Image 1 (spheres, one colour):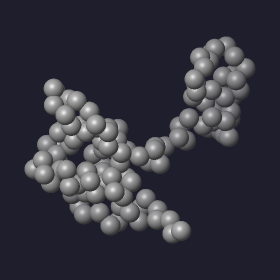
Image 2: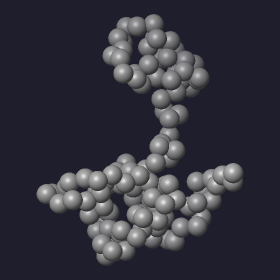
Image 3: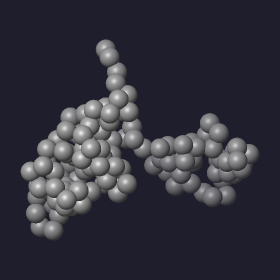
Length: 119
């Protein structure tokens, strides 16, 4: 199996496809009906751009209803997300997960101390 890095995939994109990817990343998610307007392209071209980005697994697309119309919501793929901001050394933030965290807890105090020491 050959794995291709995100940067290699991005190098294959056209200028407008790279602009579309940047828009999705900057917004954290955008409705396809706004996507093509923001890029100043036709809805058909916007759809083709999104399709290319989905095929290359650079964005995810979900059905959505927006302003009473069926559309898609486009988000960056999880591999684009930067989890380093949730880390303190090798500890993941205790606020990530299902349960509520007491700010007075040892887990939170330890995470804060690790955060302080790494800076």
